[in-house]
Image 1 (cartoon, rainbow, N blue to C red):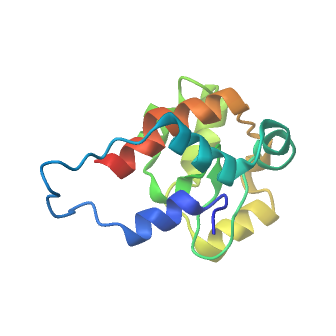
Image 2 (image 1 turned 90 degrees about the vertical axis):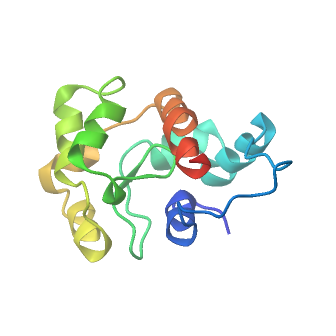
Image 3 (image 1 turned 180 degrees about the vertical axis):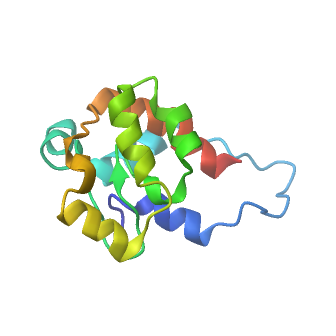
Length: 142
């Protein structure tokens, strides 16, 4: 089942130390394949703007998630800064860095109580797509 936490689930189940595949195998994914993932994650831009442009907590062991399945619970503050500083103001990036590595009920409490005004961070759909294509997809291909 696809949803906003699909990349997080992939990270849990896929080892980064995959055995070598056959020499004829390719880890190339088509644009159409990526579009299916994006559509499964956010449905369309209108729904993204209504439901996902601000941080959410997708439940379970997820961290606070922004953009298209970018789970801050699985990143360090420095990595968040290096990825998002081209798209968000320093103040907003600093808010995201505070929740780096926080998952599960602790993340839920932060969102529920809007600690640090985290819900004020807004990621436009263009930036979300760019980070998804340039960063999130690469995690699965490495």
